[in-house]
Length: 302
Ligand code: UD2
Image 1 (cartoon, rainbow, N blue to C red):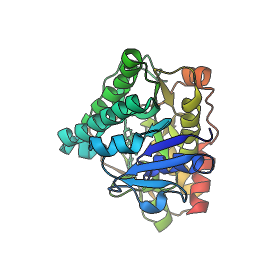
Image 2 (cartoon, rainbow, N blue to C red):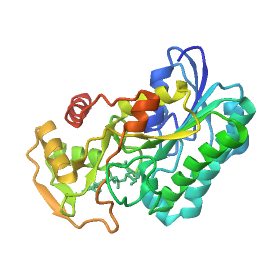
Image 3 (cartoon, rainbow, N blue to C red):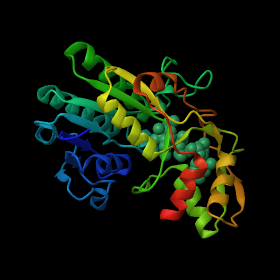
Image 4 (spheres, protein in one colour):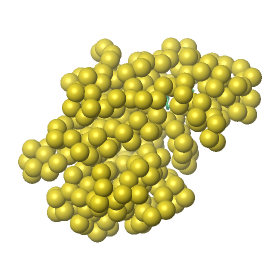
């Protein structure tokens, strides 16, 4: 991808800033972010910052004007916060996405959006293929299910080029944004300090942990694929239990921390892992970073 005008919403945040990094040397990159959970320092040199909230239609349309390509990563990513404030979460996640899709219609820009495995809820079986019945269990999951469907409908109804990427559990540098962080950054922090690593429940629950550099690869593939108007799983296809994760983090950080069990989460998803057949086939997407390697580079870099 080169010589394009690219907008990255949420470009000061975790995933968005890595997408901006990958594109800034060969393209005109505009970051739309209100820096509410992201950080200005995450934005690469050479990218332009448009400060604003995705709920603001005028700001979004100004940012997307003349764009060729939009990566829409801005969101209220805290599941907990979506439970506390479902309406606010909807306004940011769904309302914000509609502003982006409308602006992209005006600009005739392709939109690659951040969807989530949260839309599957508690699956009947794993691995999860894109045809799995949707059953979101949180307002956040409902928001993501809605935008995943909007992406398809905007393609069908208006011919907009859209691709929805259903991220599994992403991790990597810059993940700790504000109060919200995933299990890997929590475990790594505990391991480094020598504090107990807190496994919630038995630790037999599983997730598909994907390094952010592979998330970026999937986004770049989505930006050029002919197979638009579709949704794709973005994971590794590797299923890891939380207990195994705790042990792997401990090893990677060379830590003496104890692994302790604390109360499990109510309604926690017991198993999650992506079926990558469709992403491989249509996007040519292939994960490259093993959990072991991803954790080690995370330990070394920080
Ligand atoms: C992930 C996403 C969330 C949403 C959801 C959809 C992240 C950070 N969160 O939530 O945005 O897309 O998937 O299903 O990617 N755990 C511990 N100890 C801790 C913290 C967590 O054992 O100190 C366990 C927790 O009980 C859960 C697992 O680790 O079983 C993963 O927790 P998480 O918050 O990182 O991510 P998840 O899958 O709930």
